[in-house]
Image (cartoon, rainbow, N blue to C red):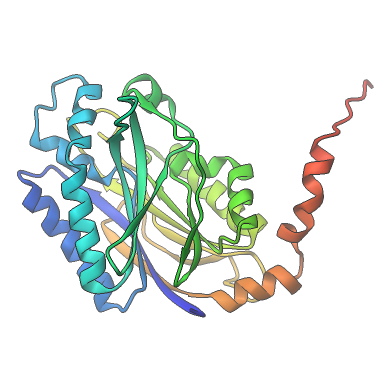
Length: 295
């Protein structure tokens, strides 16, 4: 497909009184994206923490996270059904998952296809609160998903701050990077946003950043949210002047849209003003032989 209409969410997390209430919010957003004839819709990291408000939020947070993981089947059924019903790809944000072999909790991101199937990308680097308070463990496998829209990769929030991983995905053919994120303040948001834009430039790819907004005051680590969704591009003549195809107003519930021209990605990688992806083939050799000099 040469042109992809994409949507990215500034998803407002709010307390819910039932799974059905959560479902109604998700359904309305997917229906809106479908009304705008989108091929791809991206939800943010940990938007599923809304479901923690169905339980006792005074319990230790690591126990609550395990309760949230128990709702994964209902989440998968919901998102898979909506992708199939509306005929679009859905970057399904993330939900905790218990490894059946080890019993460890992981933060897993999903990509649902229009046929109702799905792929899973685990978060590869844990933030301190995930590791130290939520007892969430990192996954070890980077994946690239071969879809009808092109090849996509997922960098979950903190993962986008590790350029080596995204470079590996780009070398494996990824043209679109999904960055579902959940950040509590402006500094955290900007760490993700600046790195997401850097990855778009250095790998000559589209980057779709989705964010949580709103608050769950009773849930640690998501009691506050600072977010702004964006669709970011390489910095070259064929693209938007600032490398920003679309972005929302910070901290408001909204959805941003943009049309991705995949021919432009192929063209800029082969004959752009600069060729950072191609020219980076030398980087590994250079990095393997660093010379330290005393002055």
